[in-house]
Image (cartoon, rainbow, N blue to C red):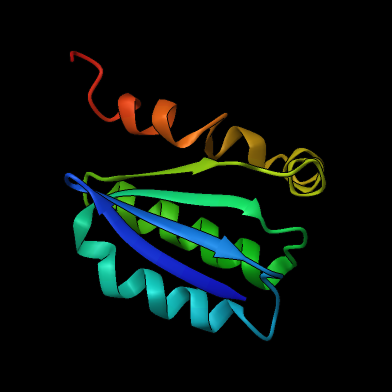
Length: 112
């Protein structure tokens, strides 16, 4: 798994590629924890084909931590495989999922 971080204004964008599983979930959590203070985060999952329960745990805990601090987590580029997993686990109701980064970013600033 590889994670590339960048900023657009006050929104942190993490582009994730590879599998998010037992072996890489701690690395993802570490990357996220370094920028959790940003409060506005977009995870781009278009290059993720597989997520296991460890990866889902990282996504869920990140969502919860951001929400508690008044922030938000948005997901973009969710592949069919990962989307099916979200549907099966009913996490599709838990996460805000957008078609693309531009739409997700705009949702942080609805009055502009």
